[in-house]
Image 1 (cartoon, one colour):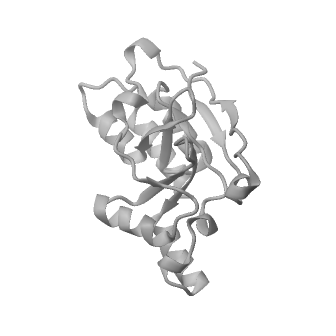
Image 2 (tube, helix red, strand yellow):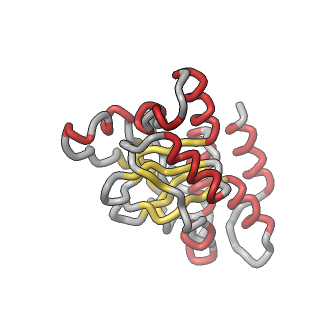
Length: 186
């Protein structure tokens, strides 16, 4: 296998645009799976390609507007080259407004970016993505190309729908999905 990658980007690497370029994410291979590549759908075939994204220097109301207009619960934070740096969820928005006691227009995206980011390569398998979700207790993964550029997002729901579709060969079983969901919800 070796196609799925774990990218972890500590939030401290994006503390300031003025501090210079962001370091490259740490890359580690995902654990090997038993699925055969030739017969299994790639993440590129299953992911959502229209991804809401913004820059770390924007105000949080931009994130809220994107979520509202696109009817999504997550926005990927990217650098100028479209490399993902972090993700912000609708819950992150609510908690930032509550804990900082300010309006979203007065809170910067950088202040509530997640501490680390796990991504998946677009040619990874559904099993690879599910395993990353389970290991990291997350429901969504930004999907990147080999250059690390954002090309989509794959969510637990996308994998579940694909597994239920008899026409798609995901290599996923109901027990795989249940085990991952159990781990995410711990």
